[in-house]
Length: 357
Image 1 (tube, helix red, strand yellow):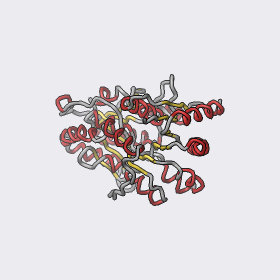
Image 2 (spheres, helix red, strand yellow):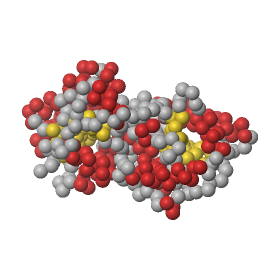
Image 3 (cartoon, one colour):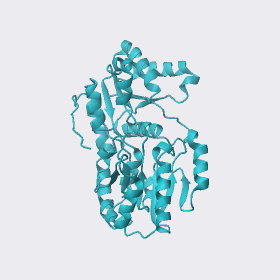
Image 4 (cartoon, one colour):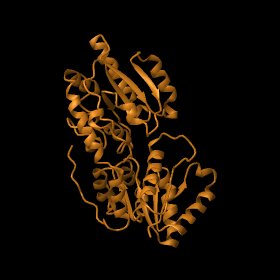
């Protein structure tokens, strides 16, 4: 009988809006929908305050479950993974690593001392084919593709908001952090509006403000024009209702750990095309001219792309329908079935997929 334990940052009882916590909670929810026996979870939130409590729960999990799923961040891989591998020498369970974000291949390339420990994990599940290729180059044959997923109620074609009028409503929908391109978006919209001498675009910013960016963001917003607004945090199950009225989502990220950002799923389910930077793995998800647009950080600017779009805004309507089709590719039911097939041993070998761009 398949009995799964999950160790990750659930922060249960708290209102968390970061991608790490949201995906950890969603994985537990989806596994509980599939399994007759509910998955058992261990919350690593504030584990440093009581490390022996975490140790106790990890041992109990290994005693109870035959498959253990770990979802550590960059700090957790230094502690949680070695701990579980060491404890597992007594229990011989199957350990599976679901990676959140795109940081793991570069981390293992730069920190060779962790490779031997991570290679003892039975399967590694990453959000992009490029990450698989990078891990295989480092000798990790147990890497598998597990795209991001999110159970949303996507719009129907009849519910799409078409034929919007100027000023066109833009938004960002991610953690509010400079490296997520927040200031890039503000500057681009400001420059275009000043160039045209009127408001052709508005910009609404949604998301949790990173604590280290809070003072800087307050300063940025204090000098921003009236067509730039911060709209706060939206529950992850309310994203479609919020985003469906917008013209386009901006995602000018250059965040070092970016993987398959959940905001892209929110946009697709809302029929909202994405204008994204050609950063990390965005090109695998956003197909230029199909479900959005990509601009090259080295020789293009966000402002230039917005100017191009302004010249033919009706073209966005065609992309909106494509976005709904794109969301179907990341149906949680399919993603979780594939994941369970891997950990049960029905899918054993990763496939190398050559990604262009």
